[in-house]
Image (tube, rainbow, N blue to C red):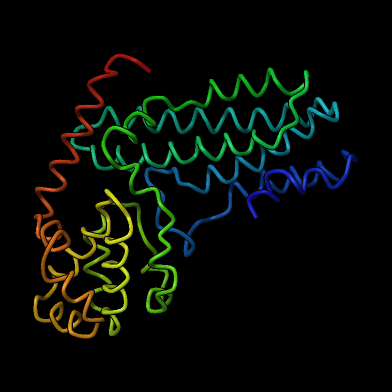
Length: 283
């Protein structure tokens, strides 16, 4: 799907009269609500912003190839405006007191969005008409500070695609059960602990902990489940396969899930402040 919306569909025709309405639709899509679709927005930015501008980037490359200057300028202006908007959000949250957790969420989102823009540019033909614009956007949309925070605080390990949770049917009951941004999943874990089939979620989380290195989100979700009721948690454990039961009751999973929420979040805040200090005074 990504390849189609970022590249293939823009190459179905050379007719600007067909492509321009497609660009208009891409602009309209930027205004669509994410309500009921995603809980991963933070401070007005989300991964959907990256998806949107990767589509517009596909349009921009095609219009540059075809020499449609007016449409290309519209597409580039939309991308630049979004880059600047997201940079402002990062600046605002970085300047706030006690906002480190949201700053980490923003950093993760911007780092992912930068990747989407890079992928959108990757569909361009490298010709004289496109190369200068490609180089400009690659530099203008670096999100250098956000990417550094993403990499150096450890939250880059949370950027996986959550395959272990995708087949868990109880999570499809309500939009309220949509997964928020990792690794801060204590509240989400407390919510799913109240499901009748919470053991299915627990089994998937434990399996994910075993398969995904260095992530913390699933451990925090398990911690959230434990916080609701130890008795209910024990009953959930009793319903999962024996191998997963053993993993849940001891070893690395229990060790990390037993870390108090306050301690975990204090550690993450400290990491954010440490990285923030390295580019203090820089933009």
